[in-house]
Image (cartoon, rainbow, N blue to C red):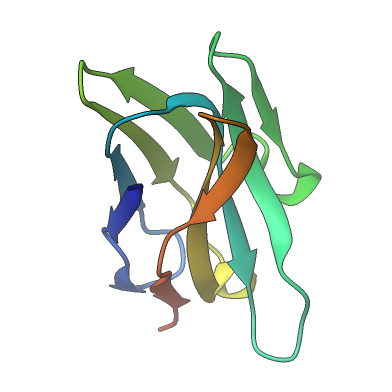
Length: 120
């Protein structure tokens, strides 16, 4: 069974920083790629950043130079982090972690979401 647990959201002033973390645990699968997505009120969920098993990263243009995605691989747990700097009000959204996994087949699993609010 796969479990994704997110942490690190909250309220921050414009220009501030937050760090999101997502821990993937379970057995019977390997983690192929991980990513962060976000959904603002009234908008569709969008990709923020992804990182492959080999460490290749991809960012949406609006966060390039401000956000950094990283990944820690432990024996029974993989953690993906999103360091968010120079936050703007338009970064306000619920942020979701996603893991692409390979077990008996290839499938994806989502975290529960964590709220990030950028406001003065």
